[in-house]
Image (tube, rainbow, N blue to C red; front, side, top):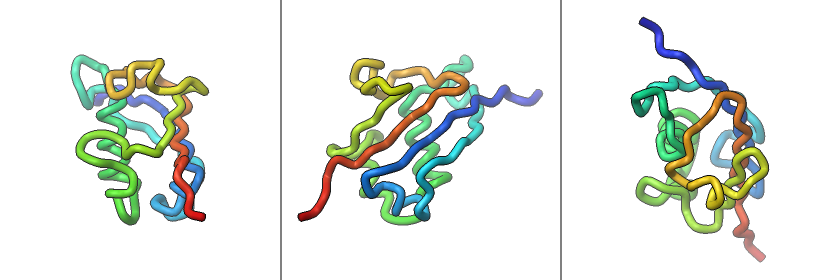
Amino acid sequence: MTQPLIKVNLFFSGGLEILFDNIKQKTVEISSSINPPNQTKMEDLIKWIRENLIKTKPELFMTGNTIRPGILILINDVDWEVEGELEYTIKDGDNIHFLSTLHGG
């Protein structure tokens, strides 16, 4: 039996796009059963991104099982801290922005 897929729109900016081969936006489909029962959490999505999308220097995106400090995440234009951070359940059609707030100078 085929697992249902969730379509998620990912956006990378503030320099993070370099880690993703200069891709600023990508729509991906992930299994809705990464974390049964059919509840893919933000933590699962972040791991999936590390394993499937990052082309270089994953340590600049993640530390342990979470995002590095200095990366702002917006889920449907709302700070992920308001949405529950790693525990947020991904929904079909979510827009998730990863924005680096750290810049050299």
